[in-house]
Length: 432
Ligand SMILES: Nc1ncnc2c1ncn2[C@@H]1O[C@H](COP(=O)(O)OP(=O)(O)OP(=O)(O)O)[C@@H](O)[C@H]1O
Ligand SMILES: [Mg+2]
Image (tube, rainbow, N blue to C red; front, side, top):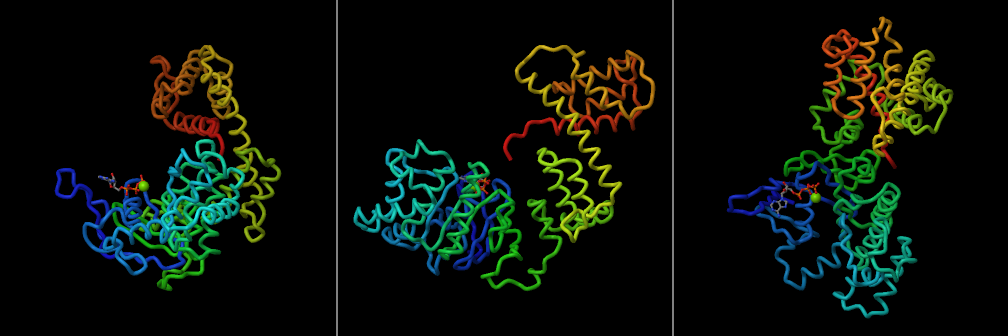
């Protein structure tokens, strides 16, 4: 793409420039991703590569040719045999069987029916969906549908696979299957793969990532873990914290990441590698898949031995805190389930009383009955969503005579943070 611009509704009142001067080169056999926030122009480039959205200015060449100069016949060949397509929404034809869906694009190549079906079946087997060959697409799950469309995209053995958010509608297991299929198509079949994704976790599959923002490719980042096909500037291959940070904060530009790197250095004695391991360990704990003792063991193991490298006392303190918060959050879960079932309860409910007690366990002042009752009411209001975090904090800092809990600002702030930590852990997140 050379100075590629695409303007929607050109010359009209609602004219909109969706891409503004994109200059990139994608090499044969490369696996690349267009990555960026919604509306940045990813699908616009997809349609342009596919030959259905002509540049308003600049130029696009695919395999050295300008698709917008093709004859009608050349265009059909281009769209059915040079490029394979996968969409987020599958776009299978519901009125014909799975195998016919996969076989269909071969009609344009004049391939006889039995050969078409043979080829389609091979691909269905390869992507482990052959058992559904005679089904209609309506009867498949999302993951199965997408594997059918992967098979369909490969049926005419194209050179380039274009995929627009291929896993956008899928659960994590189906996502993995589709990502594995794309990787194999790139590595084994040596196809060029152009993927659009929102998901930072998928960038590790790619040779290079084109980070998009507001209609431009803001930066091109080669993946240091992949042997590069493109001739990339050696200095870009230097693996720095920037790479790691751009995975943690995929939408932030480099200048913001530099600031984050410094703030981490100034405020934390743990580096990003340690933080990443700590996060992993806490996740296992939050999923309740380990014990406190095992967590302490992992936190104190040296970094070189695969652990986080914390001191014993610190690991213990962290573990104690997590155990406590997770424990307390169980009551929030119970409470929310009852709320969802619209079970009746009063604001003097036992669960509210429990949560109130957790919060004041580290508070050493004396309580008047009125003060405690006001605190309970504030907690109740926060739990049912009558207050946001700020409202809760303001309420408990209000004098008792005015309906608050009369805490000083610092105590009110700490109690609010504690409640928020319990609250977030008590939310059902479901799946991954
Ligand atoms: N047919 C159209 N007419 C006018 N504007 C359009 C049209 N299609 C897209 N746009 C605008 O162009 C911009 C880029 O759209 P595009 O679909 O390429 O974004 P995207 O990066 O694919 O976003 P998403 O991640 O949400 O799919 C958006 O602001 C969008 O509103
Ligand atoms: Mg899009």
